[in-house]
Image (tube, rainbow, N blue to C red; front, side, top):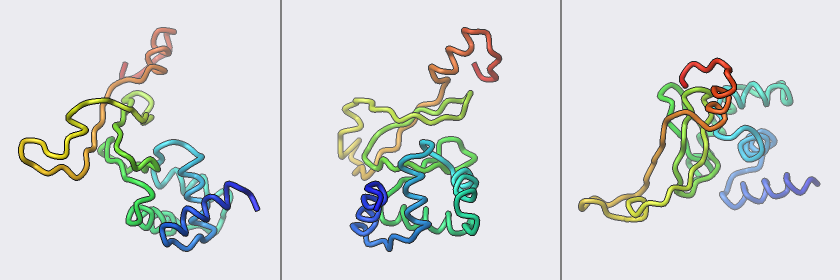
Length: 148
């Protein structure tokens, strides 16, 4: 058996999730495919490999993974939900030009405190919005870029 497949099966079993074929494929896509994908992108990609997969199966799998703490939803763009397999605290950078989301490791004392102004902090969701370095390079080369 494929070692990556075996690793994914173990990961699902540890979270008490039955490792069905679709769940394994969704988890594999999340870990090895495009970073921070949205459900529709996953569906279109997996549909090529699994013609019987439905959008409902993708949504149900993502919901289950969220409930079990395997993934976190990201609501950065305002128009879609993206998904992140890195569930430890970190921030994100959203490029307004290409739409890509980057993981950031930003050090700040505010991110480390459990209490801020007397409030108990359970989770911090931070993100930055701008233009990524790749899009800035394209602009320097003279390529047209809508947001730069």
